[in-house]
Length: 136
Image (tube, rainbow, N blue to C red; front, side, top):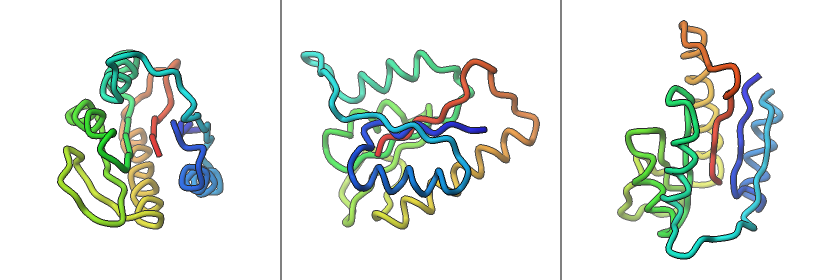
């Protein structure tokens, strides 16, 4: 079973995404926004740290909604999917822009389906790392 980590997704939008994914049969883990922040570190530093600890074949996505997410979008580009989630478009380093909430649900469903299809086509996940990371 694929595990989806909704990091920073304890608010209404994150819980909504988690409920939709769980009802679709995914194992969902929700993280908290109550993190300790290192001085002079940004979300891009956190993404680079996580990505460096993950096997390079593990699918990863970062979804964010404000300018504090731009460094994370930059860190994800070339290593995973980066998505700006806002009602109105603005210039961004993210690869995609979607409107909440329904476009987010649709995007995640399509992306997870594509990841599973990739697995079925001969891709084998490392047995010790089988999570998808999603920041809501």
